[in-house]
Length: 173
Length: 276
Image (tube, rainbow over all chains, first blue to last red; front, side):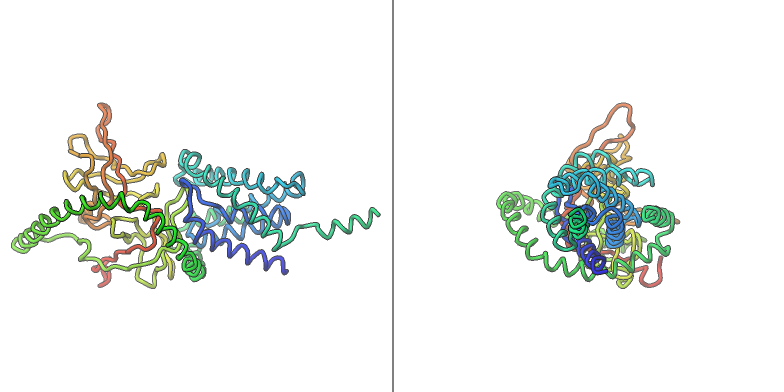
């Protein structure tokens, strides 16, 4: 329960910071995606289901605060949280480069996913503007955010299986 | 399950009207987050000011010289314009001339803070800290001192969404201030920083550097959303080809959409006394 409350607070504060501060900072059209980096970090630390839940809540908060298309960011962040969580639970476990690799890959997929959904619902989806204008800057800024955000998230919510790990050692012994 | 829920939300919010239950929920939700956003803005303000100070200082010297020259030209223009305005007002009175709503005298202004800046490669929108509580409605024009910013596209109890001129979904009827050539200003689909003035026929005259303003037309059953003579930008280039009957005109917006801190929402005075 404490974990859920902590995560809810982190997600809410991150949403406010994203819409108030980070959306105003940009390289080209690309702004740092604090919310995305938080969701990727939480998913890596706590698993796929937790990541998907946090992603859904974060997306909903973001769409509400910015009057975005309700459900769009939720959909993208839910998928981002789930797939990052799966990577963390399988091949990415305990690898130092996992947060950076995940943030880089998810940033690209998140933006392309957003472009696709917008295209499908008939909204403006400028591919060139995204690829040349937004993506490079966003990628750099997100990677800069990755280390501090991941360390903060690890401090705040811990890592799934930390206690299980010691139990496993006892059984083997 | 969550993906399905997201898809359901997306479908409903996409299909329902702007005053449907989900949009209303979004408005109330935005009202809840508004105080937190305002606090975050206040905290960030000193840092933004410090950054702005250094940034502006760097540009100030170059700009000073350019602006001094511009000021002298504008002073002369203003004197001529003032004279013309007085003359036009006098003639209108003599002719008992019926005219459309004018900016700024026929509009009341709501000065409001921007709480969410424009962002992203897709939508160019900002959220402002006033909504139904200040009589703001969908499609109200939004301006700053430099010119047209956009229009209100969604209204909540205490916040509203503004679709900027730089958004791909935005379009406004406009004309060349010097030559009177009319067209539609919109953002090109390619996603560049400039706007285009579309639909200007080749038999009209346009010149590089001409000011583009809102045309504010009125028909018996329909009218432009924007009042006349609000600055939109300046023509930076134009070209024509033999096969195309219209010009390709690029317009540089007069407003810097990346640094909007406050805007003015224009509310028609006619509407306040029971008009549409």
